Every structure is written in structure tokens, then in C-alpha cells.
Amino acid sequence: MTEESRQREDLENQVWNAIAAFEQIVETIPNDRVSLEALSHAYGQVGDLSRAREYLTRLVNVVIEEKDRDAVEMLRDRMVALESSDPLARATLSRMDAFLEAVDGDVRHFDLASESLENPAAAKADEAEWRSSHVTSELSFAWILFQAGELTQEDYAMVAQDLSAISTNASLVTVSVLHALHDRGGRSMDRILAYSARDSGVPMIPLSLFDVQDQVFQLLAREFIIRFGVMPFEMMGNDVLVVLLNPYNKQLRDKVEAMIGRRCHFFITSPSEFDATVEQKKLKNELKPEASETVTP
Image (cartoon, rainbow, N blue to C red; front, side):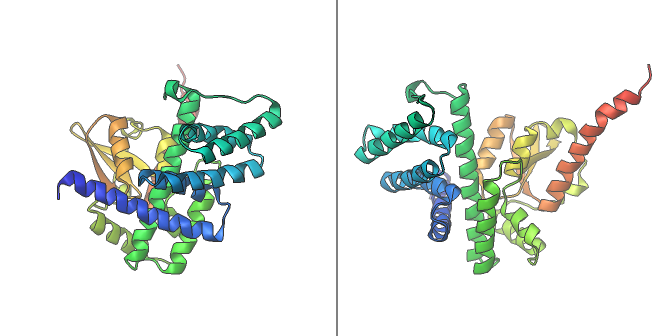
């Protein structure tokens, strides 16, 4: 098996693990938005467009019922992409347009051929898709721990519930399995970190031993660091050393390397040390203006 085919198989396994996890959630909470959106994306990834459309339609029904105009507008782009080849998608799109028109009489129509990431609407949709993909990867991580016996079925269910709740939080928080486990306590974080490092091949490091320089920390936006649980912490020549809280998320690793524009070497660390470093940087930046005010010419 070539490295490329192995990576493709690993990614597909992650997607199917996430599908199983999210389907368990919607069995209990049929109107859970995050799970419905994640299932729509995940089935699209494995090529099952019928199931992808089914979950997208269910999500549309939920946001219309909840009268969430912004969500309907955001989902409309994806329904437009299905409209030309699917009569059911056309019917759903008509319902969406009727809802939007009833709300304020102004229905926005998008030309997908002209959409780009330079367009704020497209950038917003891209961010939403990335956040959904991130939750999918975190559920896949929890599933791996469950299958390995590192989490009980009850642990897994609680983590899935916590991730679903956290991911819908409008405030800037880290959506991660390790944070969910740490916040609930009762599980050996050291053992879980050791297993994850060994199984994924991503080494574990104590982030607290490093003095993270501002110029390295700022290689990624602070919001991105916090939301996705990933942080550059040291330079090694032209390469960058990066910690992350999900060693199985290869898509995130690829994105980080592309954003930084340098070769990156990845490590896993504890959520408490990750949070401590983020807080340290926040306090340092808050103290800078106060320090400058006390300097006399």
C-alpha cells in the first residue's frame, strides 16, 4: 500500500467513525444542528450524496422551524449546489426562499461560479465548514479512545454531548476531546495522552517547559489557536514546532503548515498546559499598554 493510499484510507476511517458518533447523537437529539451539519459534510466526503442531502434537508427544516434567518442564508449556498440535479433539493430550496422572503422580502441569490474566498460570504461559509469538520475530527478522536478501551461508553456519550454543546457556543472556546475530559475529571489524562501519542505517532511534550516567543506564537491568529487547539511554540532553524490537542487530525496539520508556509513538526500536549500558555500570552499583551504608560521620556 502506498503512503498516499494509506493516508486516504486513514481519512476515510476517521470519517466513518465520526458518522457513527454523530448518528448516535441524532438518535437521541434529532434536531441537534452540529450533528446534522457534520453528517451532511461527512456523507459528502464518502460520496453518499443522497444521505448528504437528507441530513442537509433535515438541518434546513430545523433552522426554518427555529426562524434562524442567518442560518438559512448560509445553508442556501449548499442547497443551490444540489438543486440542478435533485428535484427534492429544488423543493427544499423553494421553501428556503419562501421563508427568507416572508422574513423581510429580500432573498439573496448567489452565483456559486463567482464565489471566492475573497468574498466575505464565501469566507464565512468556509469558516463554518471548517468548524464543522473540526467537530467531526474531535468526535473521531473520542471514538478511537472508546474503541481502544480508554473511554467507557458512558464517557464517550458525555464527551460527544459536551462537544456538541461547546461547538454551538458563540464565544471563543477550544472545541476538543481533551478539554472535555479534563473538565469532567475522573479519567487519567496522562494515560490518555500517552496512548494517543503512541497510537498516532505524534510525540508528547510538556509545553510548560518552553518560553513561547511572541513572534512564534503569532505565526497563527490567536482566534485560530484557541478555537482549533493548535499552537506554534518554537523554531528549529526554518522549521516550526507546533503543539495540537488532536494528534489524529491530519487535515488540521496540513492547513496549519499551509498557513504558516514552513515545514512543521507536530506534538501533543495536555489541555491544561495549552490553556496556561494561551492565558500567559493574553496577560502579557494586556500588560504591554500599562507598561508603556509608565515610561517617562
